[in-house]
Structures are given as structure tokens and as C-alpha cells.
Image (tube, rainbow, N blue to C red; front, side, top):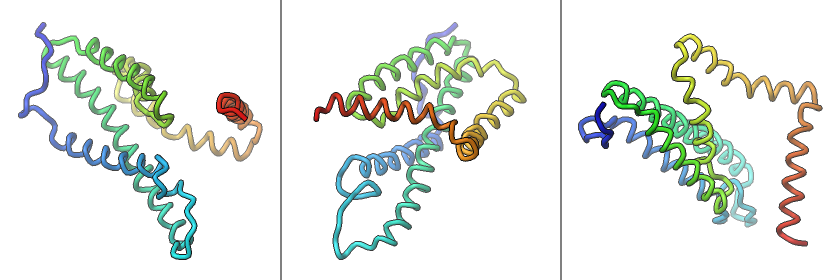
Length: 189
């Protein structure tokens, strides 16, 4: 068993690095609009020079291309990066699972601290999901494809169920009410 060391420049996945930089730039744009800088879909600015119909169209474009794509790309890269670490570890004879678990633990701690500063943190969620998905590496390709399809279709089925049976929304409404109460309690009258 050899020791773990950083990847050499000639072993890097250049396409992955470029895609990661592109995704981080998109997430930066998304976070700037969510940060209350006075522009973007969350702004409430009024002026005679604003075009509300164009704003609606641009909000749609923003949702599709910024929130809908960059977060997806970043999520894909997270999984791809972990899979690549595990595969390289297996190829070189290293026990890479321990390294991946340590990195996920660091992400978990970093995400928990960051959650105190920015409520839109996703690092904590990635770490939790990473621990949950580690056992999937032992599944067959067929099982992974079926599981992936079920996970992709689950939100669609859940949204359809919420439309057909409104009582399915009750747990979400209870959590939303509890969150609003907590927020009001701690922020004062």
C-alpha cells in the first residue's frame, strides 16, 4: 500500500477543472443576486425605466441557465470527483475510502459553520449526501441505473402527488410554520 499524495499536473482532468471553474462562476452570479445587492430576481426596485415583462422573461432565463444549470453541473462534478478519487485509490492500491471520508467530514464541519453565516449553504448537504452514497460504489451498474432513474423521477412523482392529494403537503407546511415561528421568536417583535 502506497501513501496518498496530490495528483500531478499531467494526471489532472483538465475538462473537469474547466467545468468546475465555469460552475463556480455561475454559482457566484447566483449568490450575488441572492445576496440582496439590489438586482436580480429577488430585487424590489421600482423605476419608470424598468420593464416588468422583460424582467419576467429574464427571471425565467436566470432560473433555467443560472440556478438550473450551474448547480446541476456543480453537483455532477461533486459526484464525479469522489468517484475519481475512489477509482484512483483502487488503481494505485491505496485505501481511498478513508481519505474520502475525511474530506467529507471536513466538508460537513465547514458546511455547518458556513450555515451559520449563509443559510443557502450547500456544502453541508453535499457532505451528508456523500456519506449516504458511499455504499453505492459496491452496487452493480444495473442497480445504479435503476436507482438513478428512481431518484430522478421521485421529485416529479412527489410534485404530481402534491397536486392530486393536497394532504401530502401537510409535513412541509408544518415545517414551514415551525421555521417561521422560530424566525419570528429569535428576531423579536
